[in-house]
Image (tube, rainbow, N blue to C red; front, side, top):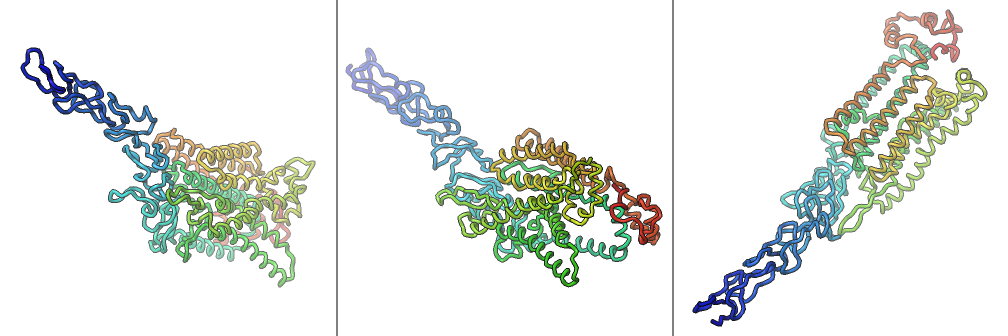
Length: 639
């Protein structure tokens, strides 16, 4: 039997039969042949087989269909027996859909950058739990921001509470859609009218009741404290002056310790802010709450007063820069003019000008890290990916300021001037003023004890108020207050020069370690207790820096991080308690201030009694009002 193609007739058969699906035959064939691997035939009576199309393969023979490639595999050619694995052929991150001819998707944990045509690791701020995420379909986590759908860059919001993230009604949110209520603008960094920016809670309503709470509380406490001090001083002025004279070194020691503690909290709070602003891990409770409780010690008035609720327009970084740099200068000029007018009217020359300058510098150095930080923040602009809209350049700490605008240009010039005035000029001015008295502050050719004695008895130094900055330090470290100021500026302002978390960590670890070694080796204070106390503060700073390093490197479990946080808080509290209760190694109180105040209020102490009976009064029975020893000679016992 001569059968046509697609049919066959076996031996002895009287007729031809059609080949089954998956088989084929030529003319005159006695049997059908199976389709080879990579081919198929889905019809009966076929003369040939078809190659598997792209995206499909067939491993077996004699099949009537080809199998689709699984997800994550592909086949671009026809007639193939096996699919290729995307990650093996194309690289990590590549993925494909079911029956794909190419790897045009991203695997789980990646997103497909449509502009570059390749997958990239998902940023930590993006939800990439499923395969197939693209630039346009990114779903952001809370606290993240993306300018446009076509932008592949995702940014951490400077105030994370303002960025809601997520998606709504299956529509991916970008730009303004990401901003929480009351916030708007690039990175949701701006607050709408009747809202003010809170450091931790984002934009809050000015009418919410909490906007002025901290400021009101501080003002009430200050007013009550000032009133009480005024009443006590008015009624007990002479007794208070005697108490001050007898305890001047002890009080100065307390002031030095309090200043060191304020500096400690300033540095730690600012370091924490810097660390989180560049993507560092957040410090867990309870130390985080502890830092927030004492955040007012940074003396940053802008974080205390809700200026957004008073400004008609947005209170931006330029306004903050003007406020924090000009107010101290105006206060200095105003005080000098008042002093000049007073001396002109009274026709006296009491040398008040230098006293005003030294007092101004002492107060300035408390807030200098905050002012210098604001100045240094004025120079750093950040470029952001706007996708199809092009790149945007904004000030890093305030995205309301476009770095291509005239307003930013004006601010930049002003910031350069203030850089010379504050972080450069203030320490340099103090050094120059102290250098003029170097021979008296560190008398040459004498031992340290004799030099300290000469400084106390030097009438010129007693008259020059500026030298008070050196009197708490050993003679050869007369300049140490300048160094101490530079140390604080390095950890709070100069650190802004670093651009990422790695550079920042390396910088603060180096500075923290070197300054601790200098403090331990020099022991610069006349009072050994103050040196030990300042060393403890340096240790606290270094331990906090190392703690941040542990958090960023994930070397601790969540429970261990909390325990370390609690230990840091306890050590800080111990330092604060030490400020209130510690007694210096070289000074003793002639009388407990509480007992003295109680006795004074009850009339149990007369001026002559206090002067005569005080065991530290080297004048023996001299009357306080009649030639009893005064000045340095009367205070020798408290050193």
